[in-house]
Amino acid sequence: MNPVALIEKKRNGAELSDDEIRWIVNAYTSGHMPDYQMSAMLMAIYFQGMNRDELVSLTRCMIESGNVMDLSGIPGRKIDKHSTGGVGDKVSLVLAPLMAAAGVVVPMMAGRGLGHTGGTLDKLEAIPGFQVRLSESQFKRQLKEIGCAIMGQTEHVAPADRQLYALRDVTGTVPSIPLICSSILSKKKAEGAEGLVLDVKIGKGAFLPTRKQTIELAGTLVDIGNALGIQTQALITNMDEPLGNAIGNWLETREAVNALQGNGPEDLMQVTLALGSVMLVLAGLSGNYNAAVRDLQRLINSGRALEKFEELIRTQGGDLTVIRHPDTYKEAKFAVDVTAARDGIIHGIDARQLGMTAVSLGAGRMKKEDAVDPKAGILLHKKTGDSVRSGERIMSFYTDRPEIREMASRELTQAVSVRPDSVQRIDLVERLISQDRDVLYSELN
Ligand code: URA
View 1: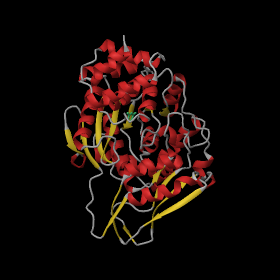
View 2 (view 1 turned 60 degrees about the horizontal axis):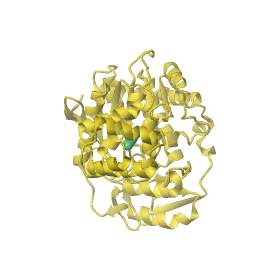
View 3 (view 1 turned 90 degrees about the vertical axis):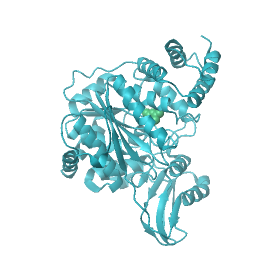
View 4 (view 1 turned 180 degrees about the horizontal axis):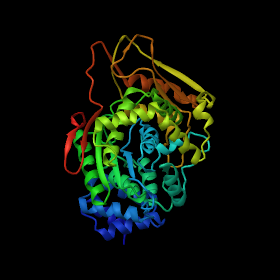
């Protein structure tokens, strides 16, 4: 087949056949189609979208680019969670051990930072020694022994997504419903999940700019996930401002540990427990969302969820010293405070801007091959609804890059809106979408 003709076909809005999609995925993953042609194809998909048949074909081809793990020999329900991408979103770090402590088996294949959002793998790699490259047999053994494992894609498991994800990150082609959907679901099918709870982010820091597109993404994920044989549900959660107080790989890992110690920020806990309740009900281990939240809270209070996180870190080669003594972690060379210019109430902290500034500080990648700096990031001292006085600290940022400090201070100052009047709170956890219903989470019990 001729790659240029296929790019032109998609660019002009025509439907690609199953054979054509298969050819493109195979040509790219085998190195016969160069990055520049695949980038053009991704951009064509970004602008033209894909219909359901094309999307099912693309997702299946991405799954078939590697192996699908058979987890049938592992007792228990295998349920995973995946987010469509957020800022300060360290939920997976808290949720995977928490659910394993509750008796759910969590096979988690996670990704790296993408665009302005962070990635679970980069956060875990902030822990010295932590290995995200697990073989299939290690992954299965760990699931059997401790009930959770978090790994990255390998050349054997959803390799097409690993390559496409890195290319999308640096070509402006992340915010596309078919590309997000095929990326997430190919990983989840390949890891052998039976059930999946998606955290679909809505708001300023989400990839998709409008509510309509976000709801469409959630519906598409639920539809295609179930068509692939994964019991899939989606929870819509707000991402106007960063989740929790920390943005950046080590800062977020430390905040996740605090959360597992029972000291997590309220918004992070609310989203984590809501997702956990949906997973517990989907796993058949609870019949009631409110009771599930109470059970999960008890597992945190008793220290069992933290013990499970330590077990996960130890099993994947991580050094527990920094988890038990976080103050021993190497500090960034520069710490800069961002302060309020006037008295007032915080009306918003732009998650997307903070995510982009965090990338410039070193917490994410500008190019595919860039290394991330685990120490770089931002700590929020105030959140929406808090009052501030002129000159008071709103946040601090951390970096080893002196040349970036002035620009970062300016961007972060502009990302905060302070006004004299009070602000109305919005629901962080909005609604649950499954195959047969779409309900407000607050109405579930
Ligand atoms: N998470 C993924 O795994 N893929 C995407 O495209 C976006 C979020």
